[in-house]
Length: 342
Image (cartoon, rainbow, N blue to C red; front, side):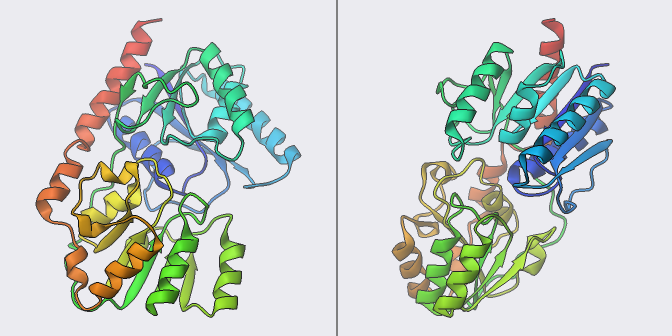
């Protein structure tokens, strides 16, 4: 049986990390020999991981020495496990995997058309090394190309989604609070969220953390914006209630897990009209081209949050390709095809 190792940034963090936790569980439940390696130290995820997990506990944005020591730990674990198939998920795992000495076959998952956007030159070098190692690329959506070559991935396998057991269908009436869920980064555009809160005079709640936290705290304090910063939470949906409206003002996205999970839970939502979100084919009222569009939609519909709920029929189309059994089968077929090619 092939020994499969999934390498991820951290146990929790965002959609990419959540998807790998779910993938690890699906492969484990299919009887596969799978282990998860998490590089960065983080809080636990709401998903309980069933397979063995190795935590390197690198400090996020830490020193060069810490990164070097973390790589040595990673290399020792990879050799100890005898990895035959290694699945690399996002920039840091790609970096560690590219310079590792393992003979493992490598699969890289492309979650976005803008990887390595803060370290472009390093990313080009790492991707070149991975190309030499003849990695197999998996895209999570049809719109994704492999950067920087812009070639299509070998296969597209959508990210799995977390099953929802609780009934979420109580969102209606006046908009009482605006919600932001996600990492506080330039990509997710939390600054636009603050501007919308300020100009609509509706209180806000931010669920998440990230490198922009300091800037956001300064903006909230200096502009006297009515926003609560909750920080990282395992399950953000537990905090939503009647009268809440979710805003997703991202500048670009990968799979858009926050949007997908919100649609699952019938949460009223407005999202940015970027290419990655247009593929969901939601009604026009759920899209905003810029900050002023968000503000205008909210003011026009301040007393009826339910108009921002998406119908069950549209939701079903979004989820059609995300059946866990189908996704699990696609991954197993890919892994077996790599095995048989050796």
